[in-house]
Image (cartoon, rainbow, N blue to C red):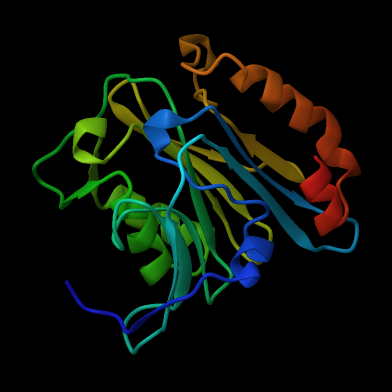
Length: 224
């Protein structure tokens, strides 16, 4: 593992980049939502909430070097296991918990835990397409007992491109944005009939879907 020069800060700056962030362990999710939209002026807006009764967590600002991007990440399980982050190329990656399902596995690709993929993508990618290429190169393993919960991912770049990556029914599924917004809560977007372990997942998804068209500023994101 290549070491990065790391400086730890608790700062309002990171909160303004990931609006809003409340830290928790993914398997204690009470309701988490991520959405991305582009306003009429072309500004890319990302809204993110984690609701939890758990306290604690760390925000890290990691400097770039000749090989890896700089980034800001939020975690509770260690530096290599963040829940979300944004890098110095403007790429955002966030996760939310989803139900257990049949997951693809191959010994012919490098193996990474679900949360390890967040930092890996931020360190090496600057666009959504680059992030998707990296996802395809790894076998991602899940299991909350080992700190790698079952999750899906949203990736957003500075150009406004976005995609959701899910592992369901023994395959990796990519849902690319086809409009000016994309939404992810606690159910599979590619297979919603599986349902959710969170009783408000579909309600929150519909609420954001109905309100995101009126979201034009960072304040609107917070209010939604």
